[in-house]
Image (cartoon, rainbow, N blue to C red; front, top):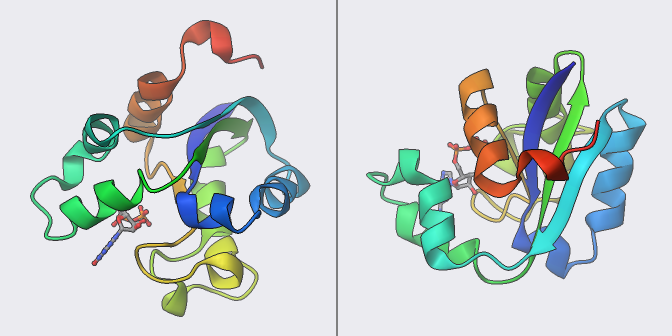
Length: 138
Ligand code: GDP
């Protein structure tokens, strides 16, 4: 069973969308195996997004991720990484397909409501960045 990592970002938590997003996750056959609601610090957000550190939007993105609590999640399903990327929709909600979470809930390119790992190696890094082995209960 493949695991992926997700974040319900500050814009969605702020608008009380945790339940609606979890409903989409479980309704699409994913099993949640770890979850916590936390306020990220800037160094933690910078470490998480280190692959983007040369991008022009790095400062804005990392500061935005610390503007309010987020929900960190690990969930599993066959082909979970790709399936979650599809359910999230395109990074920019203006380009996202109908029925995707970003199309339905995101505010803009930055405040796009959810994060999802894009490959096996990033999923492994992101899961272990936030969760210890004993916090993941399949
Ligand atoms: P994702 O994998 O679909 O989340 O997209 P990326 O890995 O390319 O970007 C990471 C996150 O950075 C996105 O989800 C957005 O929140 C943010 N982001 C991406 N592009 C931009 C941009 O051009 N400007 C700003 N402000 N944020 C961006």
